[in-house]
Image (cartoon, rainbow, N blue to C red):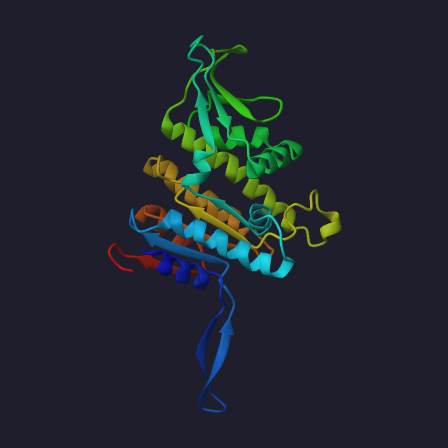
Amino acid sequence: MGNTTLKYIAQQLSTPKTVKKTVPEKTKEVDEKKPVPKVQLIYAFNGTGKTRLSREFKQLIASETNGEDGEADQSELSRNKILYYNAFTEDLFYWDNDLTGDTAPKLKIQPNSYTDWLLTLLKDLGQDGNIVKYFQRYTNDKLTPHFSEDFAEVSFSLERGDNERSGSIKISKGEESNFIWSVFYALLDQAIAIRNVAEPESRETRQFDQLEYVFIDDPVSSLDDNHLIEVAVNLAGLIKSSESKLKFIITTHSPLFYNVLFNEFSNKACYMSHPGRS
């Protein structure tokens, strides 16, 4: 998809629709404005621009907010309004392979304004235990992440029982993707729970007060079918627990993931992007 098409689709995802409705007593059609659905599902083949769409949508939301608030930092504006998970989220994590000693590989997190905000928030909310729980659910209950004190790096070990563990190990690319998804899922879980508190003054943090959208692009690329279904069901349950006005956009190239989510949600809009169409 070209940039113009992506921009148009991004605008449509955040715009209420006007539809024709027949009024029986007047036997005529009138315009009715329908709000943006709580959940929008997009099935798209690989190479049709799902990741670029998520970035285009983020930039659109930031520019709309910038118009309201005047000059401001775009990354902070978009962070306040939208949480997103895509391939660029995974790029924020990289390996220090300990080439000198070859004994202590660590997964590190690129320092920038977003990751600084994310790690501080997760640390303040005490989410390391939940991240470990989510990660082990989709991988191995013996494979355990260990966060540094500042949450800036993570080592992994295999628990062997009797309080014994292996030395630091490097996990597979699929396990790494699962870990990064677990970090985002823990953040999303907190965002939904905190926004469910109606009175802002009673919330554990005010960091999510302005949050409007959650954009999730293909969290299942490294999962087998059983775990893929589990991720879809768990994600759907979490989204259905949201009682605020948060809107969720989910894109995927997986027919199975799409179908599970399709069957889980009632208030949704669904779209399909075909290769070669612009």
